[in-house]
Image (cartoon, rainbow, N blue to C red; front, side, top):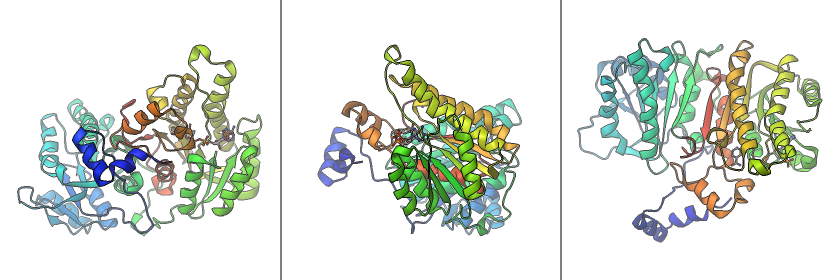
Length: 471
Ligand code: NAP
């Protein structure tokens, strides 16, 4: 979908006018390409004294082969040596033009409000050195795992810091916070790789929680990170178009055999896309009373089971509540929430979801913030978040994970049809001043779908460019 404003402000005259008048200046965000490295530039690695995640972070930086600088502090030097990371010395006082594509900071050593000054000491001199589409990652301890109320408060304070930093950064740069539970130090690889890479282009100001995975790989560096889903079967509902088509395409790129599901009326489009992706099409209305049974029978007979389930199919039927019919209410709740619950029950009860299964649900920012005219839709999408949070401990017992992605304003046929006022507000009212692309949602889903993402369970990740709504 075209964003004419972004095209205009990216030509020399438009840029000058926008900057003089103080209008938003969205830039073209870096996105994945087959030739791009995880970090296309240099990284600066820092830590508050006493951090417990230094070596784990250094290992990820070494694995993605990013040229890294750090200070002369002994603990940082030792962590780099332990991870075989050859780090140059960064002196913030030295004059120079050194710029960074990523700032990565271990804040787990911060145990009191006084020690929060460490954040300013590190980021103060470095934040203006972040390049366009750069990444700021702060890694800490979940407040619920802190050893004292003061440590819990200081770790919780990181959220405010990171969310504000996300709003201060410019030119498509983003900031995120990753809370790593004790024992999950070796399970951070997929999270850090995703958040450092262009794949997370439209994710900012977010908090992810990593807990110990049941199946931590011994040597993540030896995994095939280009084809992480090789040999896996991935079901995507609502796959014939829009965000669902992008999800199917990205999961196929990552090596999965995609089973695309959509209503029979869209069967032709669905088959065309699945032919392109070497996947297979399955026509089904997910609200059919026996939809779960049909799905279990099909997946078992045709594929011997399924490894990844993406609940993407969803609809809107907008009306203010006083004007909303019972049908409009029931249809939206039925497709967006009840059908997902029923399919999950069927797949789990029959054991069709194979060990280490990944369920990823598409919620919505409006399920978090609410939206006038969408009481039915926001109710259904908030319910999806509730389902993910409640099911996470249940599916963990069977070795699976369940997470949700909550898109903000995404450039699709649906948002192109919006009236210009709300459409432009949706596009600009976020930290990167533009709408996201379907592929941005798809990349977040592919991240949760990876076998190596077993440490992520019960998360809700917004893909909204840090929208001001519901923040
Ligand atoms: P879309 O283009 O309308 O695609 C949704 C697909 O799901 C359609 O092919 C649709 O078919 C299918 N579907 C609907 N009911 C179904 C049923 N009962 N059984 C099987 N398939 C069914 O929507 P989209 O914009 O790509 O959105 C995809 C998901 O992202 C939805 O869950 C949506 O709520 C969510 N989302 C989108 C945005 C955005 O900005 N676009 C933002 C936040 C969240 P039909 O033709 O029958 O409807």
